[in-house]
Image (cartoon, rainbow, N blue to C red; front, side, top):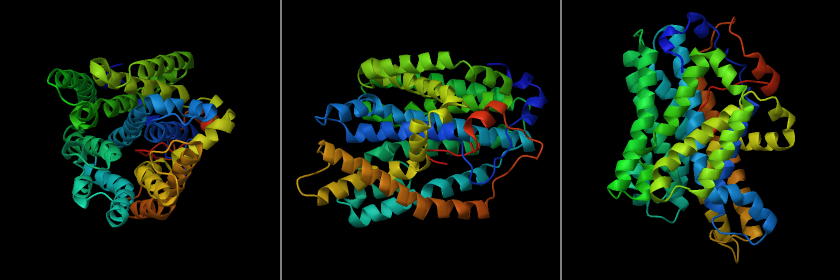
Length: 399
């Protein structure tokens, strides 16, 4: 990576302009869509259904769907990192409180509505999940809503970013320090997982706890540094599609063969997961073939647009509906049960997005309007050609 301090100021002036309101990037929504399909597959298809076609479609989620979270982490770090770095390049500082407020209005409404509904209709004791998830400490205290651990990792990472980055944002060496810290996180997280394995830390704690898992988010922010402050280098990287296709294939092989268990999987496995996620992101970023393959890219992008709501609600929605149907329950893996699981999860996620998330985002944009770059900003030509509207500036599983 080139030294950030030596990059011309021109690079900061060539940042991608803020796109029209309501526009999106197809390629990034496809990445979200793939991530949510992997996550759903991991939770819904732990056993074969008996239907060879359905089992083939569910194979990625069944085998390495847990890595969908790491793909989300890399994409989230990439997008949030760009927001932070562009604000710093434009203003010379960073408003951590404004960043945090927009972030909370993005994530909290769907989450807290879900927790409230679960407290009323759910079967688990409220004390086993409510305060833990409400305070975002569930990945340390434990929770009966096991899939929500990843939200805590993200909240902790971005809270640290919002607190620490303003302290160095005005320093001339800010980018050099940031890159050093991010590389340090990559090394430290892997080292801590190794120490944890040697000390007998459980696989669940190695997967859930923030200090073991921040490297995926840090990797995404490192990509954002290149995107914002070394755009020519970033453009050269994304043009090497063959390299990223090979890296993605190699990563998938490792994740399918080794997984996240055992000494190798619970240490290096998570590193391979975020490296594979980064390679997949670069493979799709601005690729002309993404809109051309609309038969698969557009359905995946549609899922990506609702992915946050789907992720929050999918387990509870599937358990509730299957519990009402005679002869079926959440453990069922028959083709009918699988159809119900996916259908209910997606339908509930869409409803949560439309009814809760989007009104909250409109409120957020009234209270804390998005900061836009000047009219002279330009969008990279390959992105305009291949992806149409180009809203990048969002985090987590949906824009």
